[in-house]
Image 1 (tube, rainbow, N blue to C red):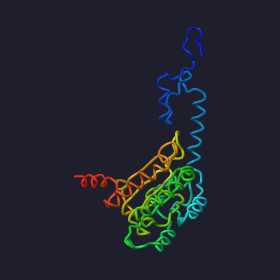
Image 2: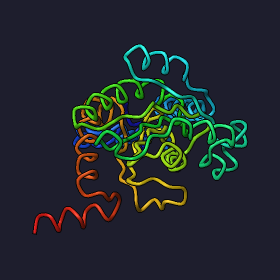
Image 3: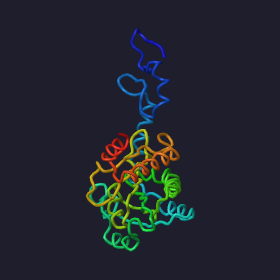
Image 4: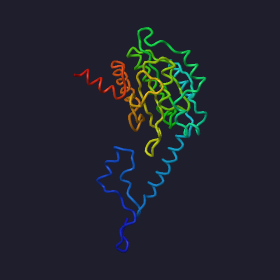
Amino acid sequence: MTERDGKTPSLVPAPGDIHPLRRFTDARVALGRAGTSLPTRAHLDFLQDHARARDAVWAIPDLDGLGSRLESAGMPVVRLRSAAPDRAVYLRRPDLGRRLADEDAGRLRGLAVPEGAGGRSRVGIVVADGLSAMAIDVNAAPVVLGLGQALRDQGLDVAPVALVEQGRVAIGDAIGEALGLALVIVLVGERPGLSAADSLGCYVTWAPRPGTPDSARNCVSNIRLGGLDPERAVASIATLVQGICQSRVSGVALAAAIGQRRE
């Protein structure tokens, strides 16, 4: 890159002292510029990542494959659908993604066990596609398998894993009520961004019931190899579940309960 006719070079790199910081993030930093725009490579990368994010939203996760993998590991599975009949409606009507299809709600009640039966609290794991099929296909299996073992190690009774098509976070409330769960863990595909299309989010709710506010949930986010890897995520979620079961509250009330115990 040289100067011509005393003019500023058309391709301007980012300051050299910024480049070492790029290893700490997948975000678009220190890209440089070409005139008033991005360099060609950075622009092409942007288009590719944008296409990947769109594909992640519209793709269909392999719930059959996930279910087979979990069942082969000894974790029973139940397949469910939300009230959204297809992906287009699901994206336009978030409220339908929070509700179970009528036929599935009735079917779940037949699997319910009274809370505390056998002297153990019953907890459930829900996997919902959310806004990223890629997150489910890449990260759900190791997280669910690890959580199943961690929860059993805590002496908890784990309900069949619910695999939900067209589901959002709050659908765990309806599932929790139908199964009589003391606590529900919802794993859902997070909204894709330009630096990550495969992030899995985890939402933990004590005493789940329809109408539960988001302030009553605890979240562990960005579960993926480039963020919080599945193994560390399982450890974080298991510790969170233990604290919630001891306090019998979740969300913003959990911090207050923990603070009172420390006083």
